[in-house]
Length: 304
Image (cartoon, rainbow, N blue to C red; front, top):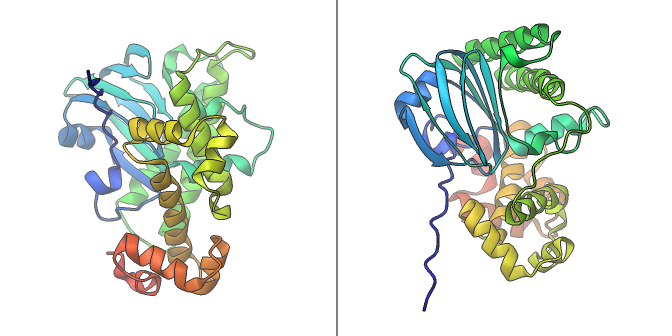
């Protein structure tokens, strides 16, 4: 008898589903109220497999399923959702605040520049807390976080000179302040709940991809480093992210290519070499096949 497969939890890519002005944006801001109008106040389970998401609610209340936990609370409150972690929520009509959605490799770059200051597991664990429940002394960090996010809100309403650089700087500032609040709410040495084995392996695979995508490791090599078979790794990726493992590696490589084409003056041929392609023509074919245009056209603005 054939087993019935469990439907995958939908993956939502904010830039492609909600805001198509910049489908491949790395840092996205929107008010909670506008997202709730679009997706519904009773939002079913979903995930963002390659994005961190931060909800900072300043008004109203919310009931939330976050990973294996069930929460409810009154604003002001904060929700931190790492990539892949499933969540769903119900909010009242007057509930509003801010939502930041930031690509995982951007966040990892920020924290990689501050070695030893943050625990290895902090960015992997979902969090929900009312600001009133934080230890004494956190009020200043929360007020600063709110100010930074409000500056992001204002910057997303315009597109002045230096827009991308300012958004990135404000995003990094927000995550530093967020990190302080996350550390303050958890006593040192606190026990973390065990993750499911499949989710642990998927997150470990994403970490390996981030560290080695330029080396063009084979899927067999990735699987070997995780001590699983290639077939199991592929199955886990399909269930966690609705993508085969090879697609996840290629998507990360493509994202880096887009970033270099848009934000650097590095020649196209050199970008191919930086991404591990021995032949610039092979890089060009890879990029064209996946985007529908050659890298030179993308650089000139064809991405719109």
